[in-house]
Amino acid sequence: MSHFSDIAAGNPFGRILSGVQDRLGAAVLALAITLAGVQSVLAHEFKVGDLEIDHPWSRATPIGAKVAGGYFTIANNGSAPDRLLSISSDISEKAELHEMGVNDGVMTMRPVSGGLEIPAGGKVVLGPGSYHVMFMDLKQPPKQGEMFAATLTFEKAGTVTIKFAVQALGSAAPQEDND
Ligand SMILES: [Cu+2]
Image 1 (tube, rainbow, N blue to C red):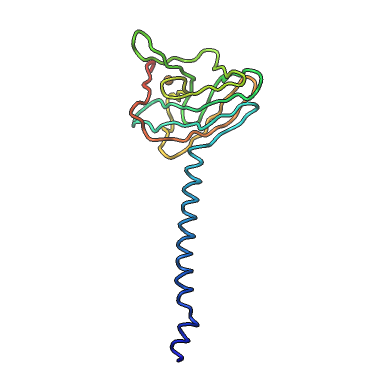
Image 2: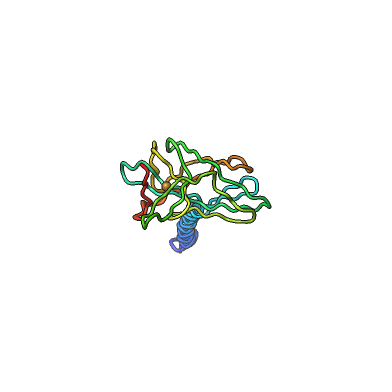
């Protein structure tokens, strides 16, 4: 029967399978791209000398905000202490290293004088409620999902440019008290 053999020759099963494989392939590729995107936001790190700077992140700011916080972890794998002296970025006029503290029962923040020491073999965490970078007089407010660059200067390790991943506007964003 010629009709039957035409179908067999056309191999409809083969076509269906290859269609499924194409869709599966596209789905796997999409997943890989998604994971790669998540990976770059969740676990990006930078190295300079003996220092390792993990996952710099910031938060989107409310409209009209003049400041934004910057957070990351610095690990010192060397045998001598180092010191984070300064930070600069195109997103703001200036950036300061701050620490939070309680003064007469009120949360305040103040500049860290003399830089932030990173002990030999130690780790310092910058995060909301403790040490942080304060980007002041914002020129380009951080936008959720984007990244922005900043340059850190260390006493011994020198300078390194890192990228901050901007997360959602947080309800507990630190308020600047010296504006
Ligand atoms: Cu601050």
